Image (cartoon, rainbow, N blue to C red; front, side):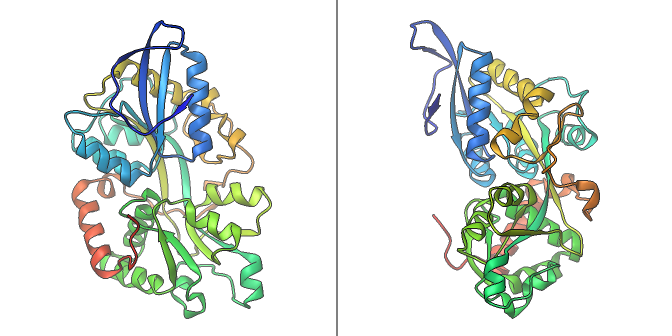
Amino acid sequence: MKRLGMISVTTLALSASGVLADELSVVCSAEQDWCDLMVSAFEAEHPDTDVLMVRKSTGETLAQVRAEAGNPKIDVWWGGTGDPHLIAAEEGLTQASGVDTSELLGWAQNMADISNGKAIGIYAGALGIAYNADILSEKSIEPPQCWADLEDPRFEGEIQVANPNSSGTAYTELATFVQLFGEDEAMVKLAAVGKNVNSYTKSGSAPSKAAARGETGVSIGFMHDMVKLAAQGFPLKIVAPCEGTGYEVGAVSVIEGARNPEAAKAWVAFALRADVQSRAPEVGSFQVPSNSNAKVAPESPDLASIKLIDYDFATYGSSDTRGRLLARWDAEVGDPNPQK
């Protein structure tokens, strides 16, 4: 396997054995170990295909796909929150894969319907709050139970969250606040929470890793990432906010003008299989799989027991909505130390 940056690739290349082999360029927006598992598993079934994979957040990937429109260096985009995938579909940056979706759960098929088959749901996960129980206990800080708690001055300097310009996780948070509280009130609340934020990260999973390590007291992110860390023995406690919360449908998309569209479509079909999705817990990925026949890990958050909002993927997965909300976030909330 190769872990290479996105370089210009040709459709055909000589493999180590001297036999012509397909090259498939994949950007993965899930966690690195899950990306690695997918590459090794795909290559094992497709020995004539050499996968070139790089991990990037959804915001970074959307920016790259836009910049490379008409001359893409990516064949397939796997993982990450669905909103940027839907935006790419709306802008004509991705193409329908034509794979069978009959075994998928309704929310995954809905993603495909919204995008005319260009973005297909592969997993779901709910947004939540995590806190380091040791840190909050040592500082005599009452743990949060609701989104509103994060506005309280007792959390000054204790919260870490990603920047929605680069992170799909943080954009889901932004869209969740807007759907819960209305756009104007959401910006007021996010600005109030922002006063307690010590750092806006580029990656959506980074804040909970920092909380697990004791580098911050509280994080905002997806619950399945928090579950993974708690299962490793870190003192993380997970909260489903009392007001309700949003969720993601992770997606997979084939890039318009992909240099190896057939291998890209083969990747999509592979990624939707029940046996492949059932392997995610091997690397501590506890999202709810989209294939109705896939095994759901006992550690996975029970979405039925969480107060989920009726997340409007069509609206918040549109270019206009995303652009407007990010502009308002930059102007009214903002990151005082944006990462380059």
